[in-house]
Each structure stands twice: as C-alpha cells, then as structure tokens.
Image (cartoon, rainbow, N blue to C red; front, side, top):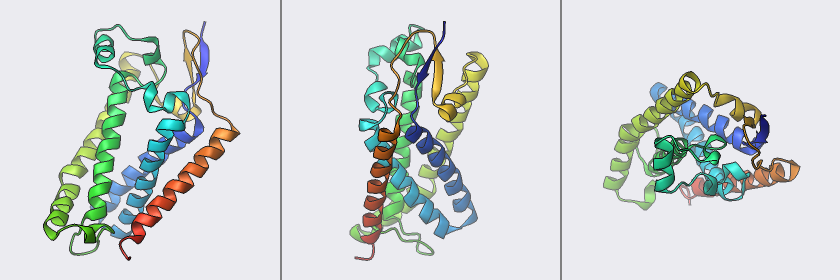
Length: 220
C-alpha cells in the first residue's frame, strides 16, 4: 500500500525553481557580458539564499535543515544499502550533501560578487569596505573558480536526477513540481497551508529588505 506524503511545501518548490532559473540566467548573462542583468540576478539569488536559510529553520518539516542534517554513521549506512526510512522521503544523505554544497558555493559566489570590481562595468556595493587587492582577488575567484564550481554542481545535480530515474526508477522532479510523494509507509507530511505560505511571503519580503539595505551600502 502506498501513502501520499506532502514532502515539499509550495515555498520550497518556488524557491527551487526560481533559484534554478536565476542560476541559469546568471551564467548566460555572464557569458554575454550583460552586467546590468547579471547584477540584478545576483541580488535575486542573495534574497533567495537568505530566504532558504530562514525557511530551513521554520519551513515545512522536510525542508528544515534538521530533517536532512545526517550524522556520519547514517551516511555510511545509506551508502552500504541500509537506508533509514526518512532517506526515501526527503533528501537522501547524498542529496543533502548536494544541497549544502550548492548553498555554500552560491553563497561564496554571491559574497565575492558583492565585493568584486571588474574595473570596467561593475563594482559590488561592498567593494569599498575592503582593500583593492582583496577586491581583485574576489573578482578573479568569482569569474573563474566560483563560476565553474557553480556550473559543475548544476551538472552533477542533473546527472544525479538522471541516475535516480534510470537505476532506481525514482522520479525526483515530480515531487518538486507537485509537492507530494508516494511512499511505502506512513510518514509525516510537511505543513503547507495558507498560514505557512503567508509566513513564507513575509520572510521573503524581509530578505528582500536586507538585500536592498546591502545594495544601499554601496552608495552610503
């Protein structure tokens, strides 16, 4: 008997797809030299990352970091084929590692963008708070190592989705679209109602305000 569980609440799903769209657009605008839009998209990603940090604490059960922050022993057991029941509902240990890696790499990429100065078309709002050498180093990382790390993680993410679909016959995209997942045993569902969605909208607005404040530091 299969049980339907609400795994990904609507705010988490919207975050996921908006972030994916922004990352793709960021790479495209960087390659095209469209720095005005690259800058705007970077601020959008900053807002989304701030939102995810907050939602990882107060969001739906399976979106909270506590639900997929696995101990080393749990990861080893999963790799040896002794998965915990929770591993097949939310993020698996490998999926969790991918999420944390992506959030970290994107955070560093946004951070270096905020302090960068390409001496041509863009100067980050926080560049004036650091030395010239530090700004140039951040710019170099942002345009080389950081960019390729993001692209590499995106490709790895897509490869993992394809592998799960091919080898395990598990569609990881459908739950991120519909929110629900069919599992073999009863499990806790993430809360996903009007109250949580309004709370998410207020959190997103607050994160947008923080981003706006950071932007303003460049002209203060």
